[in-house]
Image (cartoon, rainbow, N blue to C red; front, top):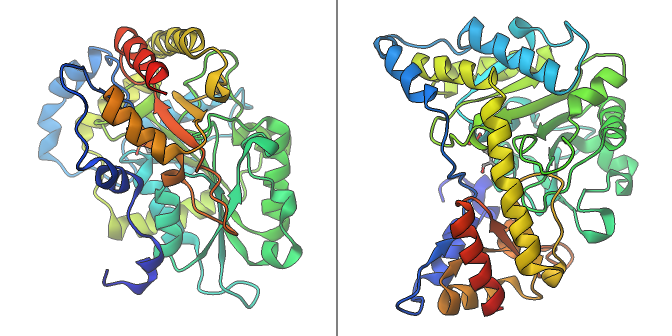
Length: 395
Ligand SMILES: Cc1ncc(COP(=O)(O)O)c(C=O)c1O
């Protein structure tokens, strides 16, 4: 790599998986299943195509960095209804910035907010461990020092910020938290989120709360960080939440999401986006607006996932530490050695999964994902049942 800041990054999880399985061919005459990538494969609403087509003349115009007023209003209204926020707490024109999917926003945020020094030290960026890999890329690219906080069984698969000392908190500039979490499916409740918001304000660091799985749940709707802000009086200071249509509406290729929160942080973020980013095409905004305003397809989507978790429960029962996640479409299965299991599953069962250790980093000689595999339940019910049957038999 040319930029020495990126030297600590190494290969990404899917590059590592491709290397692991490069020379392995699944047994012939067996269907193969890809449960590795978290790409939703349910049908998305018909109106998406129709709206893009109806608005195709807008491909002739440059979109603005702030999108359309209609899109931002749809996002603000959705947040207000979904998280039962006081009317007016989220203003479309001050608190919402559209994104080309949340991945780019999560990455770019670090470049906008990580200073060169804090409290006479290198700035710390806190990440859960395991984590969604762009958080680490962002921390390195921005010149921060990543600190990986274990999110493991003993702490309910959520990082324990109470373990940080004052010196570390003084150096902290940015915290990434994914809730519901990829890969473990754990969800922070409003008490946890409230304590975290208070901590961020006490030590003046930014919270980037990645809530892109908030709509994929089978029982209770997970809480969001804006509920914690409402509970603390409604200020959005230090808090940004990221939401995406990719999982909620099964349109990962649409590239449409948003970030909401602290207007001062959003100002710096937008200033950088004016230099750095491609904007979302206007016809996409038309479809995105309609998607945020429609809940019927989201309920249908949830019902499909619910049926697959029911099937997983039936097929795996309580093997491999099976838990129904509070949110997301992943199983996080304890198979003792995730890499070995992934190899065997592909070779003997034709099932592709990602070793948990590829989604986490060793800290003090211990990799908290090493025992696990992540299984994405993104296909239809029939294919998922067949894949889980093959997985169960192979392991
Ligand atoms: C935890 C998490 N955050 C963010 C994203 C990014 O999604 P998108 O860029 O499609 O909004 C993903 C996608 O896989 C994810 O798993």
